[in-house]
Length: 109
Ligand code: HEC
Image 1 (cartoon, protein in one colour):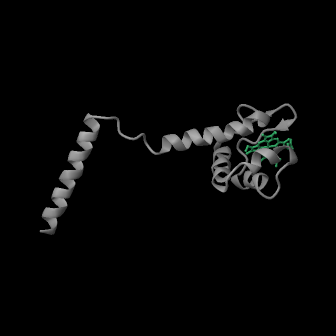
Image 2: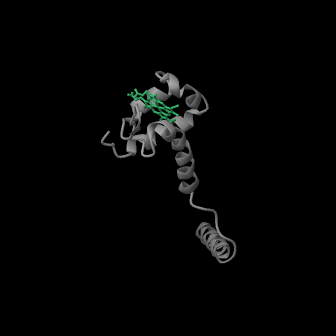
Image 3: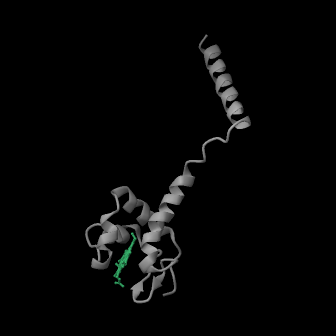
C-alpha cells in the first residue's frame, strides 16, 4: 500500500509539472534573482571602485580581495567615504558582496 501511495504521488507531481510546462511559464530558476541582486549591490561599489572594481582614479581596486578583507571594510573598518553606502546594507547584502568581490578577477591597477 505504501508503494502504491508513493507511486500515485509521483504520478501526480509529474502530471502537475507537465501541466505547468504546457501552459504558463514556470517560475524562473532561483539563482537568477539572486544574481541580479548581487549585481545591483555591486553597482554601488562600482561608482567609486570602477566598473570592474579594479580601481578608479585614486580609489584602489577591490576585485579579487579576500572575502574576509572585504567583510572587514564593510563591518569593523569601513573607510569614511564608504560609510553612507555601507550603512544601507544588510548583513546578508554584505556577505553576498564579499563573496562576489572575492570571486572577481584581480585587476592590474
Ligand atoms: C563613495 C565612494 C565609495 C564607495 C561607494 C565604495 N567605496 Fe570602498 N573605498 C572607498 C575609498 C575612498 C577607499 C579607501 C581607498 C584607498 O585606500 O584607496 C575604499 C576602500 C575599500 C576597501 C578596503 C581596501 C583596502 O585596502 O583594505 C574595500 C574592501 C572596499 N572599499 C570595498 C567596497 C565595497 C564592497 C563597496 C560597495 C558596497 C564599496 N567599497 C563602495 C570609496 C568607496
